[in-house]
Amino acid sequence: MGAIEKSILTGNRLFSLDFFRGLTMFLLIASDTHLFASLTNPVYQGTILYSIGQQFEHVPWTGLRFYDLIQPFFMFIVGVAIPYSYANRIKRGLTHSQIRKHVFQRSFLLLLLGWAMPCIDAGEIVFFFQNVLAQLSVTYLLAFLIMRKSTSTQIVVSFMLLAITEIIYRGFPIEGFNHPFVANENFGTWLDLQYGGASLDGHWVSFNAIPTTAHTIWGVLTAQLLMSKRAPMRKFKILVIAGLIGLAVGYALSPITPIIKRISTSSFVIVSGGWTILSLAFSYWLIDIKKYKNWTLFFAIVGMNSLFIYLFAQVGGVGFIRHLIQPFSKALFGFMEESAANIWTNLILLFFLWYLCYWLYKKKIFIKI
Image (cartoon, rainbow, N blue to C red; front, top):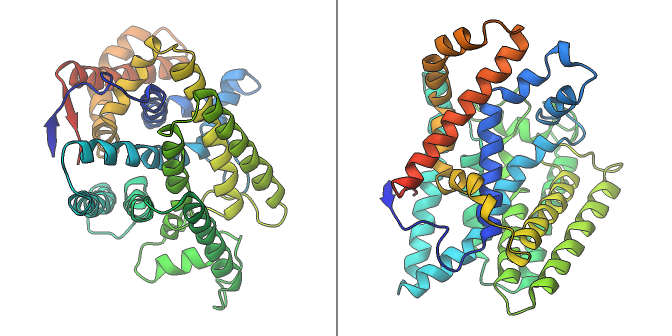
């Protein structure tokens, strides 16, 4: 699964995508270190630190915080990468059927890894498909299969998936699971209970892969726009308009269909899609149009090994490094109040995770599937 490739920051690339992917992964692993959780210590209540920490916690059920956008960011980024990767493989002489075979293989491996991680964590065979990799195995495949269709067709399919989800949740007939927007009393929970994979504590559902396919499809459409011959500022304006429409529609729908990430309601998918498109649009304007890109390498090198660092963090890597540095951090920060010492320890842990990505980058090692 390992491969040594040329640095992805060389050649004709979309630098804003490299940055956006890297920033998303950096924030994800920062959360895994419990850095943001340490900011919500009661001693910081009423401060800006506490407010920042809260934004890096998922909303318990209804609403939207910044951390609820991380998975949509990642789903969207994968979609943006698909047309670029496809074009590069075509240039190397691969046929569409060969690329399609690779996509099916990659989708299967993503599903396998997404299934295996909860098993490793539980120490036994369990069936949970609510994590990012398992969800991506579906969204990636579906987005690829319609990638060569017209723009209008792809847009229609993305909204059809949202409409189908809405209809299923609202019309599900089984008693006890016919409350579409109540935790653990909806179709998504019922489906997961059928194979023993329900997340009753977290309320996440594996069916989220269907509505969130829209994020990956919109990523594909964004890439196709950015690869077109339109003027850069024209592309930027189109993205901004699309993002603003997403926000307007998503928030307007919220009184009818609540914004709930844990079951990926249509309003959540649309509004988070709007924020995601606007985020990439701003990155594209700043980095690819205005050419302020030298500083982006700090984040981009994390995105170069996004699969590796995600898996490393999820299967105990964070705990392992914490165990190594804990004695030294205690000695170094022992004079501090415990909450402050925890923040500094988590910052050092985050640095070690970043440096691991940096070391792989310097060795030109990029782990992919």
